[in-house]
Image 1 (tube, rainbow, N blue to C red):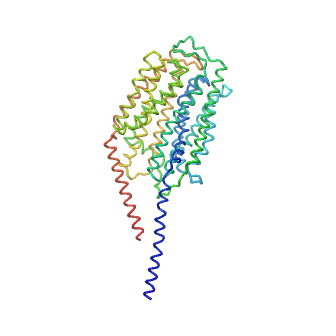
Image 2: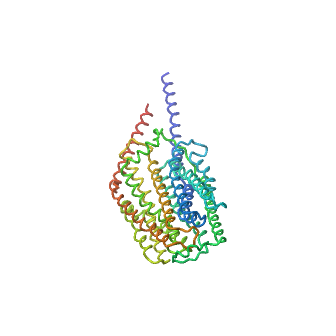
Length: 517
């Protein structure tokens, strides 16, 4: 009997070995599934292009389109630009709140937002660049479709940004996909400027002169030329709409959203708790306010530069090429700035990179109009634009890490820091565009005129040089109080790594205890 029982126990022990071995064999393929192919990373990156393409086209050309093509009064154009940007700012945290509470579907949790918003975003974007045949309701037309497009664009971009967490559970793969995304998004800004500028540029028959005289303000384009300009804007918007749809299709076909299989999350923070969380953290406030001033400086430059080149410098037939040179220069220097900030530190890079544009902002308004000098200044300005838009996104993760170190008990807060930063920047950009366009109204801007009064030229010079220079100085002074330097940043990295290691050890001990039980 004892011998039979021993044989049965031995046989049972042999049987228990097989499931263990098969379980070990299945671990490796499961890990390999977390790796992303180059094709998947490219498809994911292409999904970020529509936001940048449409953003650069609207940023550089919407103001001059509303004034000279749609021929709106500057006060009405300022209302459209301000309300549209302010509405865009409000929709970011709202859509983020709704997306975070979305349920999982057969195609994922983020993909339905991206797919459903795409056709409406394309339609509303196209209608922004269409001049309606009636005169009385133009302001309402552009206000409605501009706000609707911003809403649809937010419904696309917020879940797309969150999709990073659902394409792989491997942090290295996520970082690699993000690097692909940044590369494509930078190229998207160039593509948007190139498409809109090259199709629309040169469609006016106004003389390309560098002098300004108030007695020429009544010279306006002919109806034929204005109709051709309207058609050029619609063609450019149509091309961008096609690219938008293709990018969304590539994203859907090439990226598979993966369901999150982690342990239970903590109770999410309410809107009020999240607002208090970010507004009460000192390093974050100093960083945001500092970059708020510097970003406003470059937004003023971006929003008014096309008008400045056209009317203050007189390069009407070349403004689209000058804008393209700025974006190309910024794109090509981003890798250099990435090396610079890793070599000399992020605070040093912010001082040097952002202040680099100041001499050229002063030079462009002090010297007599010269096309070659305008191109040279554009190349130099692009170098600084790259630093101004790269550094905030490079320094925000440092604030989040610093918060984690000082508040280890609070979880799920990362998106709050990013969404509120975007909210503040977008709202401030709406204020800057509205105020700058309204200032043109007070300066006597002639809607659709080939020439503008000297007061308009002076106002444009102020908007692209003295005001941005003052804003940059104020922003850099605030950034001097930003407490996270390279030493503190490296210290936070070590502390976070120790925290992760201790969590991993505790989890392994818990799992070992559970298996032994």
